[in-house]
Length: 328
Ligand code: 5GP
Ligand code: MN
Ligand code: MN
Image (cartoon, rainbow, N blue to C red; front, top):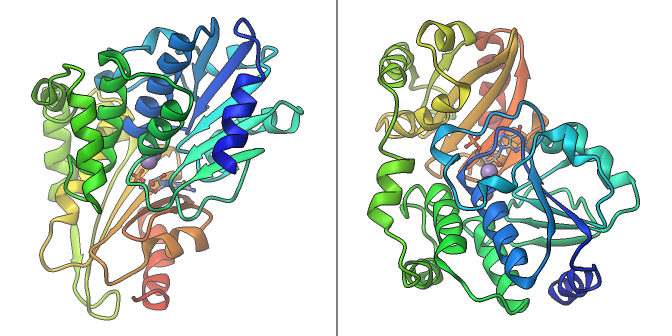
């Protein structure tokens, strides 16, 4: 029923109307890829008033700047026009929308495409599939129901989204993920080139920064009921010293989560003085989504996050008792 409501809400909007697409703050590949892929699909249907944005600084991570449809991206202040429809991607709750959450109270129909079990049910039509590995799976389904045929540009966006949230297909849960990947690749896109550009290319300074941040990691084997926790942190001073943008820190959770002696991995990333974005990962011994929700954030059972305040030690002290409380 939600699918039909979403199709009807989109069909009800004139093709020349303003349509505002929004994804979450500090956008990742799934947020930008599912949003831009869907926007390109709407463009194929004939929509001419499309704008895409995300809250906060207009700082598109370098690897995503060349995504097809990136020309539709506008800074947040330009999102407060007169849209007749709002589409929201990969957003589990209002806190991930920053000031753009205000648009939800303006009486404009809002459709939410998401895959977070912790989704708080924002918007008028919520297409939230916790079984989907990425929001792009939901976007693909809605595009199909709208009668949009995939082309290479749409496919590149949806592929980047899918590859990002599955850790390059490491966290796949069903054959349907590779079936979608196959349909995307059949449009002619090059998965190898995309992977090299998005995941395997970084500035020299980002590599040096990673060396420092990983070098200060701490292993606490007793945490999480003996399952173990490994954690590290990165400050804005670290970023400045290496002349790097914050997004380069987002991939550092991957080597940290690979530590054999720990079930839980944590990276604490400074956003501004004393405010931290925290990434949590689990191998299954702890429900880190429950931990994140308890601290005002959200996510999935094995990958979650929240915003925290204080020092890195303060942040870890908040997390440790919640690990004990959420063993699985
Ligand atoms: P990451 O650690 O890659 O930033 O995020 C991992 C997962 O947790 C993603 O699904 C992301 O949407 C979610 N997440 C990260 N930070 C936050 C947050 O501050 N609030 C909420 N609700 N979810 C978050
Ligand atoms: Mn995301
Ligand atoms: Mn996602």
